[in-house]
Image (tube, rainbow, N blue to C red; front, side, top):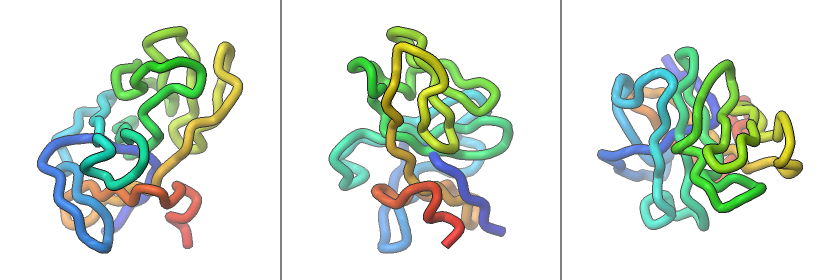
Length: 130
């Protein structure tokens, strides 16, 4: 079974042409996130992979309002709250949900396959359905 979402960061990372394995299912607790550094993802920025309500999502790790790591934020009800200025972002779309953020953060495709969490850096969450 394959499930898709928009975010994950972690350890035990391996990559292939079919995504980057960032963690095993169960490694990221519900309400937690894993940071994938750019050296690992091959993407220009760090990516945060989130686990919320049984689903996984991935967003660029840096808040669009200030230089803060979203993987260190609070995750609840499909949103992550920036630890610096309390801006909140939708985990599915990356859209800001309140001030002070006004710009969205990029989403990345996440997939659960073979009891592992796979990240597809640079592919949006919307591309998961394609």
